[in-house]
Image (cartoon, helix red, strand yellow):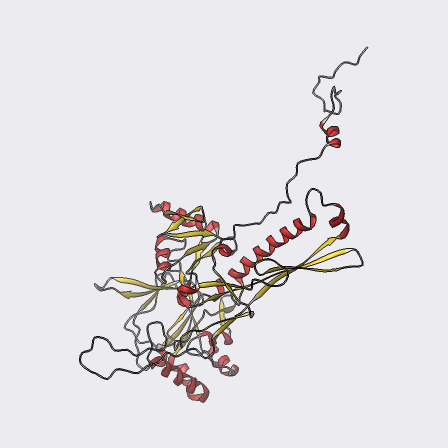
Length: 469
């Protein structure tokens, strides 16, 4: 008598099978398999949108017109509890003190002359028309730089925040007055240097005196609105006046960008490469995933590298602080207004979502812009492209970049060296190394790259935008 079929609710192991199981059938067949998958591969829009310039010699020099205006930067501070301390070497970032090297003792003395002040939201730090008798460094907080419009209404000239400074030019002029008002929008910690203390230090240091006098002379040299050495011209004249003679002066020490490199050593056992290559080539798959990781790192470096990365090399005058916290249409307009021919925005996907939420809150519907067959949110016709390499801080703040690209427009360009030995992609090579005594073959995978800003207004950054409001 045949055993009855078990129709209970037990497991498949307890049930009597009447046909070949799938587990057994798989012994006589092959599976349909995918290529190895990898998380973390992004669209890498920055690499796709940048125009790449061939740098055969490994170094790219950016020649510019001579600029008299001394560049500046944001200062960093240290603190012990609520007490803020100035790092003396950070004072060299002030235009007034830029280039004053070898004066460590003098910088220490100058740093000790600063007085810490606290302001509440709504307090006036300085007021227009009052004597300008201090250099102010904003250690923490945000403040609005205010002026008056044509009809006396207040106008926001700029937004100042951590590391910004003002008053360093006014303090070298006697009997000068503030031409603007600075009002704290959040609680602010400010370091103030009295003019009397600075003048006393000048009298004690001939080196500092000579440096300040040279700074005053540079301010009086003829220059255009960009701070470049002026080209003397005549226009609108009649008759036969004597025309001015002129020439175009160049920077004597232009910046040079050296190609950077991202590299790794890929190891593959010869037995794996020889025997396990059907239906997919193991070496090719290992190289494919390694190259993907290198390209991701390349885009990260273009954003974050301290030598040539966009976040660290944007000119201070091209950095904008968000007025109210989250990225608003007003902030985006302010960012666009500082340059011509903006090609695209670049932001973290969560930052793009925050901007979309602000537009929705205001009842504004951003346009849709098509880029390479894909549709993106745009603002004023400029696409807002995602890039997850732009960091988000612990305080949930991030940045939005806007770029003008191309050498013909004096924009941002990528730098590479196509045509290198053992190249598999432009400026990316795979060199086969020796086989080790453990039968492991090594491949050196390298990608050479950098980026250059041809003029300062080619890149703008909207900083410290808040997410999740």
